[in-house]
Length: 175
Image (cartoon, rainbow, N blue to C red; front, side, top):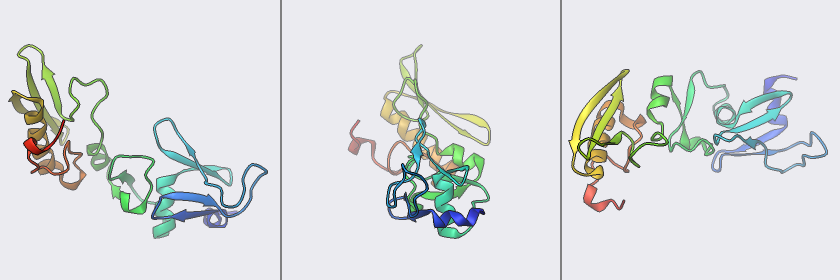
């Protein structure tokens, strides 16, 4: 049995990102059941024909007919959202740019931290392996806005922004 035989067992819905069984493989699996299991980090795995596959890589294969040659980026940052519209090819560096803010940060915004000595908010962006200091700001929102502008200029569509658009007005964004 080869890799291409997976289509004999699974179907993929590109609008929902879900996989379903089209053939019974055991007493626990029925035709039509949702396939896959969720890992603690949010990625979905599928075990089929003795091998494990990430759902996002299988989704790419189902739609484009080949396993992706590079990493797959979840555009909205949700690793369990495997709709084809949410997936794009990315280099490792591009995929890394779309990461969420670090857990345990002093700020709820990416690229922002409280500079305790002065009580002001510091904004930084990382690009090309180097951290760039963007300045100190009186408010957390001002620092987040500065980060968004710099991140979008540096990373383009791969930037994970704090707000929907780098030009969004801070005054119109509720905390």
